[in-house]
Each structure stands twice: as C-alpha cells, then as structure tokens.
Length: 306
Image (tube, rainbow, N blue to C red):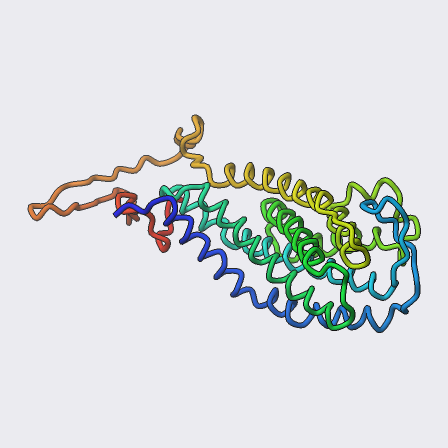
C-alpha cells in the first residue's frame, strides 16, 4: 500500500520530534542551564534603572537592569539551545534523509517536518524560560514575551539548520551558535553596550524579538510587527537550507558526467536469471551484490543507494 503525502509528513514529523527528545545534551541544557543562568543573572546584576531605546515606543524608556538582564539571559539560552538542537538533528539525519529521498520519500514532507519540529522545540523551550521568569517578576504582557522568545528560538533554529549543512562536527556548530548568540544578544543590552541604540543593531538576528520582548515586559505597547523581522531571518535561513538540502539529497548518478565509468575501472558483469519457482538468481563476476528495491516503498535499514 502506497503511503500518501500526509502519511509521509506524519511519519517524518514523528521521527524528528523523537530525535529531539533523545538529545540528552539539549534536554540537560533546558532543565539545568536556563534556571541556573537566570539565577546567576538575578544575583549578579543589581536592580538599578537603565535606559533602553525602544523602537516600538519610539523613545528611550527606563527599565530595571536586573529584569532586563534576565530577559537577555532567557533569550540567549533559548537561541543557543534551539539552534544547537536543530544543528544536531539535521547533521545526524543527513545520510538517512538522502536515502529516504532517493527511495521516493517526498522532499517537501521531510522539510516541513523539520520546520514543524523546530516550531515545537522553540515553543516548548520558550515556554519553560518564560515560566521561570515569572519566579522573579511579572511582565506587563506575558503572552507577547513568550511569543518573542519563541521567535528568537525559531530564528536560531533556522541558523542551526544552515550551519548543519556547512559544518560536519558538533563542536564547530556548537561553538559558532554560542558565539553568534552571545554577540547578538549582548550588543543589544545597554548594560553591557551603552551604544546599543546604534543603527547597526537592526541587522542582528534577534533585534526584532528583543525589541518586542522588552516592550512586552515593561510597557503595554503591541509590537507584533517587530516579530516579523525574526520570521524574515527564519525564511532566509529556510531558503538557504532548502537549497542545500536539495543539493545534498540529489541523485548524483543522474548527472551527465557521473554515469560515465571512471578511467581504469574494471568492468563488472551482473547476471539475473529466473528460477522455475519465479524467484531471481543473482550472480556477479566481482563478488557479492547488494540489492535494494523501491517497489514497496523505502526501507530505512537498507544501506543503499550511496
């Protein structure tokens, strides 16, 4: 029975979510790193007024430095964890995804499943971080703060997907995600960077999410349009990831030059004969032959095609 596109999407989404749930490093970061990080920020940064240039309000607003530091810490933790989760998941499933596509599994279902898993991961991590913030103080607009943190996670989830297409080792990916996230969030914090109101900060990945989060925490202004900047970053990263994914999962044997035998390669003869009982007999002039069929769908354990 041939699987429908919706069945393929359901299977792929279930696989992606299961893969995230088995990432013990990411789970440990969620459960331990976020509360410890927020607690350290709360202890280290004093509760003193500091000016924050709010683009949605169109003015500089006085905010509590301690609370602003915890918002920055929560956003830094969410971006780091979600970016690392997507980087790890995409890198580890690269070979398996290619085999699925070559066996007839729809690319669109695989890509949409990764985006749905990213949406779920960003939402769960952001919700956990937002609830922890309630232990220290109550923001003016909790839901908008939650959405802002979720958008920052989506942005870095897209960045994690792109980095997974470029780098092969988890160490390199984790290092880059940490450095990009730290610089991104810290530059926008007036406690660390007094000149954070400069025009260059508008190009940072979490600029829109940070502006929306601060406005949600300290004002009653609606800042939904600034969240679109984070969605734009996600769209750009998704487009780059789509191009890399299509290139990686393409059947290179269909290219014009790749079907030609290599110079000096030894000719191999494979003979297929039918027995009286209807089964096939395979014989080769150069040793064992590994057969995979596409007639009944894909077989995850089948190691071919390479």
